Image 1 (spheres, rainbow, N blue to C red):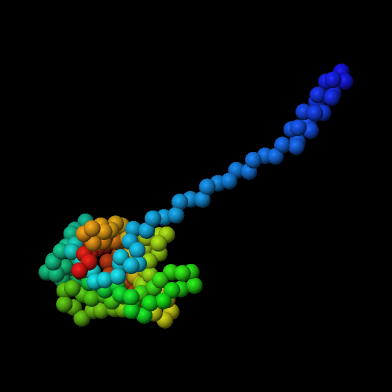
Image 2 (tube, rainbow, N blue to C red):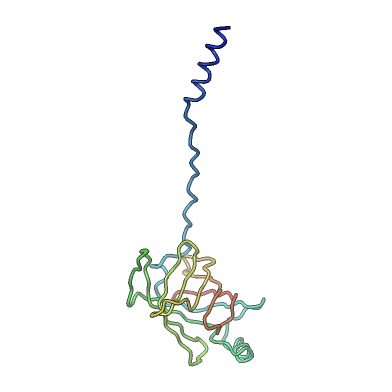
Length: 171
């Protein structure tokens, strides 16, 4: 009986003295950016615009749609440049972007922009208030052909066609 009690005491001491291994959850992988800030800098022109199940490539195709919906430019040219650049407190670089209407309308806009690498978004913001004006969700980028595809997900004020998809070529 003494041996049994002695054996049980040793088993209890051994069982309570073992450290449990801490389970460390691996960090989720960092998102891979579709396009970098440096790759974005340049002049881009729309080669295809998709909205509501239709595809448009020419100004004549979209003029009636613009008039009918009283919305802003559809076929865009965007100049992403590095004029007036700065880096914010989070280390994110900002640049200066200019929008142009390819179809000859008197429409243009300029705002600061940055890329949210984690969400793969190109965000244009007011240069004073930094309020988001335009938000594009980057869908894909062909580096060799320099073709960028993104979806317009937000504008303020709502002047454009939300959820339209732009395919643009870098000139």
